Amino acid sequence: MNREVLSLTLPDVSTFARSLRAGLGDAAPSHQSLLNLIARAGGYRNHQHLRAVRLGAPPVEPVDGEALRRALARFDDQGRLLSWSTRRKIRALCLWPIWAALPPRTSLSERQISAQIDALTVFRDAAQVRRSLVEDGRLSRKPDGSDYRRLERAPDPTALALIRAVLSRRATSEAKIPTSA
Image (cartoon, rainbow, N blue to C red):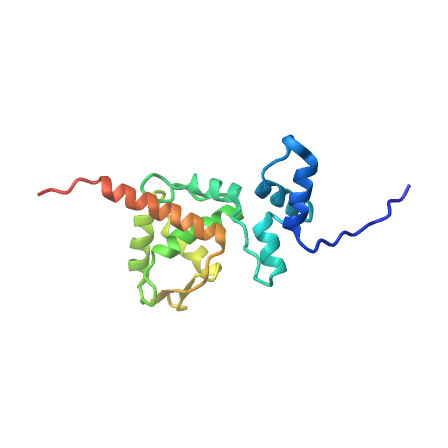
């Protein structure tokens, strides 16, 4: 048996949520929870996402929590990359904190960039990391390998969250190192 599709247009979702809450009685969730449930039922992430889309603001791209967790597991407590992932998505994500640590608008020789990459990794394969950064369009390279430059790109929200987490680990690690007086 085919279902007939009925569309429902709400002039005010907040008023609808209040009315629904009153009808549910004591078992009703909070007003904000109801707004989020209604928005999710309509295909939005939450009430804020619904508002942003309906009011013309660009929707906020969510952070991929699972990818972030997997990528962050590849970094030690000092913010150094421990190993090279076999998964392309995670490998590409792990390059962002390395990219962020490279100096912007600075020309670096192959040795200089390799030294910086080695300081940011444990597995010491600067050539592989360099190649991957170039292939992903985050690093430019002269054909003779004499000049490397970081290319400015905006990281997506997941990459930005990973950069922040790794920078936080580095800062925490540096704060723990005792200084001699």
